[in-house]
Image 1 (tube, rainbow, N blue to C red):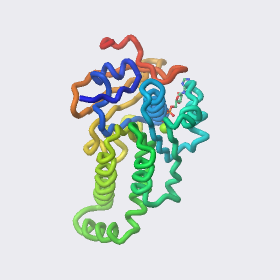
Image 2 (cartoon, protein in one colour):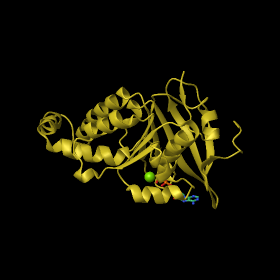
Image 3 (cartoon, protein in one colour):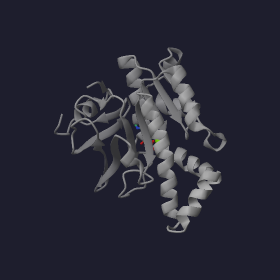
Amino acid sequence: MQRSKTGIQGLDKALNGGFPEGNLVLLSGGAGTGKSTMAMQYLVNGATLFGEKGLYISTEQNEEELQKAASQFGWRLVDLENKNLLKVVYFKVLEQDHFIQKVEELVQTFKPKRIVIDSLTTLTDFMMMSELQKDVGVSLIKIVDTVSPIPRTEQIVTKIILYNLVNKLKEFESTVLMTSELPEGSPRLSADGVTEFVTDGVILLGYLAVGATDFRSMRIRKMRYTDHEKGSLTYNLSPTGIDITAENNIL
Ligand SMILES: Nc1ncnc2c1ncn2[C@@H]1O[C@H](COP(=O)(O)OP(=O)(O)O)[C@@H](O)[C@H]1O
Ligand SMILES: [Mg+2]
């Protein structure tokens, strides 16, 4: 089986060598847990360590903000873009229509091995809003409303949007990381409670407060097509990015 290495030592070990190539993986966690950092690190490492092209689709931070964030960890995105190993694309969701077609065009011309969508939550929220305005969405609501209240309708529309998106992404044969915003203490694995079922993998990132000290820890909750570490991995946001700390007993 081909593996897509993250280049993050402890994580690759916990994944038995990396993500199974072609997997769609969700990074879920609260604000500031390091989802965007880990997603960018996956692309930066892919480019610098393995010469693999990465496409970063951002719906929250624009190119300049992402460059600023990346420079915190010593990553020079412009250099990688100049070498044609990285492409950062900022999608203003409010102005964006035909998202799936736009991604398809980008993938066909750039041919990335690795794709990041940051964040899936923003994207599907807006896709759902625009879908609800279309005829198909409205008729769908009419049908469902006769038997279910609104939240159920939203979940169905989210599910349809996700299936379309996921099926398209799977056609590309790239390994895909998508981020999902999770409120603290949420019992779900993704913001919508649906995504975790359609993706191949879920990594949960969170804080663990012990007394006055905060520990960051992540857990691989699901990873299809491979065995993996089931326990939690403590990590730091170090000057070089996500760093799985040596105190984990799997190392
Ligand atoms: N230079 C740095 N050194 C260590 N940690 C940093 C540095 N810069 C930012 N961080 C950490 O990174 C966090 C932001 O991570 P980010 O990946 O944007 O989180 P998320 O995408 O999950 O909201 C900040 O809250 C901060 O804790
Ligand atoms: Mg983020």
